[in-house]
Image (tube, rainbow, N blue to C red; front, side, top):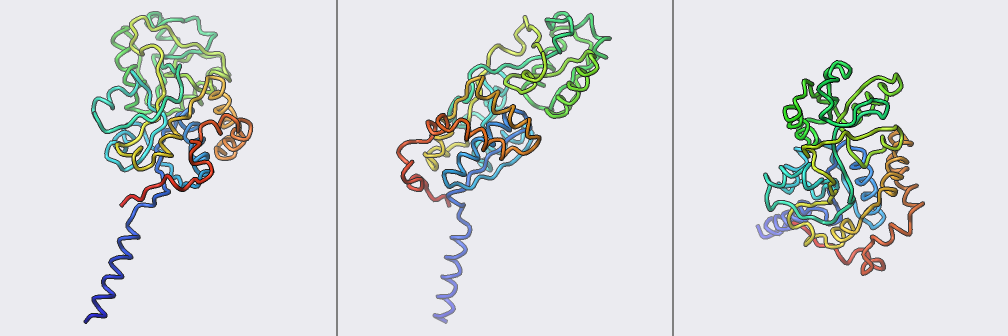
Length: 293
């Protein structure tokens, strides 16, 4: 009887250990936006170098914020404020931690090729036929789509907003530009398409899309206490326009090989990356971790 009880205790202890969350594992959510893919894969590679196991979860923006608020994922590195993702911060008040500011001069709006003789959203009503009465959008529920839904009645646009995705939007843009056709899309900077094509963001006198935005890295509540090293590292990541453009470009040129592209970018920018690593743990990269149960 005593032996059976002893065995039961041992089995119970093993189960408790096996059920503990890996203290070295970080879950990062990301969406299919060019800058989000770039920032996420860059961060993952740096964390892997520091001895962490990183799992990436791809989803649309609404499920990402829901997952982060519920604690099912740890980090999201492409949160736009004060306009694009404001509604999610209002919905999940007190559920997120801001880790840092990745980029300072982001912007969203409606974008057309430079050869299209339209410069403002106020001009769009008279050119509905040339644009086939369509605005090519991205994922439903994103901030830029919500802003566009508001811009349509605000500017009296007789256009249908087409739900698509980031990659599908750029594919349609590429096709139209090659044929010199008129097209208007939901676009944003930073994005590699502004390096590849001659584009312009239409003026927005009513400020439906806001002005400049800031890209933040955010985490679930409690993350920075449990992972102070990771929180500090991710909070240190800040990219200039030139740096993020070069990162997105090298990823786009590799056509799907994000890991190799990011490794090449890190190699080219090692001195910059090293400034993001918290100095106190460079000699012992394991002393910062706490066990989560």
